[in-house]
Amino acid sequence: MKVLLVEDDKLLGESLKEYLTLEGICVDWIEDSREFFDLLEVASYDVIILDLMMPHISGEELLKGLRNKKDYTPVLVLTAKGRIEDKEKCFSLGADDYLTKPFEPKELLLRIRALHRRVVKEERLKINNVEVDLQTCKVWVNGKEVKFSKKEWLMFKYLVENRGRYVTTQELLNYVWGDEPVGDDVVRAHIKNLRKLLPEGFIISHKGWGYKVEG
Image (cartoon, rainbow, N blue to C red; front, top):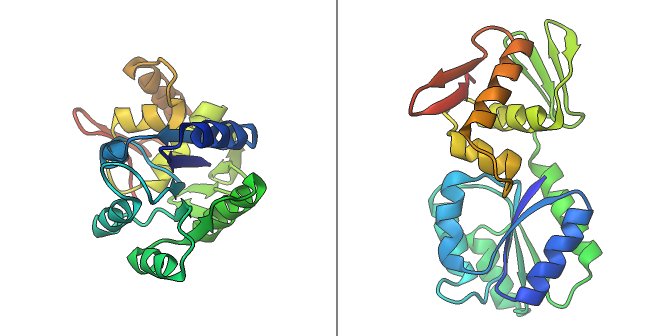
């Protein structure tokens, strides 16, 4: 699971990122709300954790802008605002969950996992002669299971979940490698490996556009 944490409290942000990472969750953390939409142009997340009292652009404005863009990534609001009016406003703007500070990190973890499970509507996909089980991370080609490395699986999963559109090399780098100092050649090498395991033409490439799996 990959999570975006939007939190300007440095101490809290650091501790949450460390805790969630230890629980096996990949976390990108931003302290400046002005980075929010630029980041979403090049990266995709399973859940967004959003503080409301952010400098520059409030959490409410970020949430409103996100839903206006027809982005339905689950959003968990994490804030010191505990009034029912604040909760009502956030839910009306499209929030999926609301947790007030102070809180137990374990509760945050449980809520994140619940949100993620809720949106995984298709546990098993079939694309032509390729079957994918997103829950068990298994793939079958013509009924025979094929094995991917961890990085190959993350890349394949991202392409499948975004099927029908071209995914840029930068998106893949951000989703699979995060802050690791790797370049475009690594993406090309992994695409080459995936193509050896998948049917011909399953992954389509277009120079200047990126890679696509047809829906």
